[in-house]
Length: 252
Image 1 (spheres, rainbow, N blue to C red):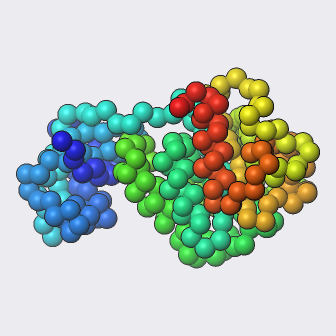
Image 2 (image 1 turned 90 degrees about the vertical axis):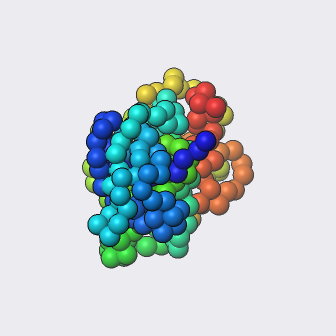
Image 3 (image 1 turned 45 degrees about the vertical axis):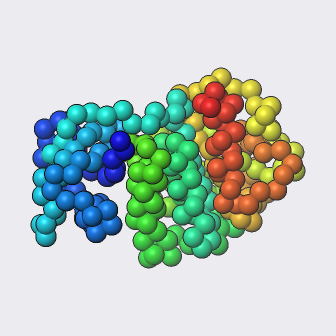
């Protein structure tokens, strides 16, 4: 028997009595019509999932008692950080949803020379909050108990090949920068010879691609990689590349 899953950051150990976040509470009561005594599952976004029982669902919110631990969907062996150039319209929403489904550990939105939006408009539009909600929703649907973090959007600086704080812990090594098929320095993922890492970063550009200066600068960050000779939609690039990387590293 399957149970509805809810995101409950406060869930810690069996026996805890917690309050669901407002959005999750509304989904439980208004959409699924669950009430007192119903059994559900909750995950805390940090890798733990539990059985739970609805104690009360009223105007003050939804209160649960945490039960026995459950086994969530396994996480990938390689923690991949996706650094994705923000795409126009709602295409970035799809990238976030699919990346979470694939199992990325973190998402870093970046603004490049050809990105058709600005940091100011992203902040004003509260896009980070929207992407965080999409990440939670995707984790719920695919069975993950981990909700990847969504970093603040930042400018990609072609002069140094990095954006603010992209070295070290922000962009785990090795770093792979996805470039167009005709880029002479690019290595096809099929021909990539690298030991399976514990962590890695995939950097994906915008609809208009990278500028020459950005490609030259990015080469100092890591390895330029391609996906063969096909031209793919910008919103599909990350999904295809992640699939190829996971397959090459024996994830599936």
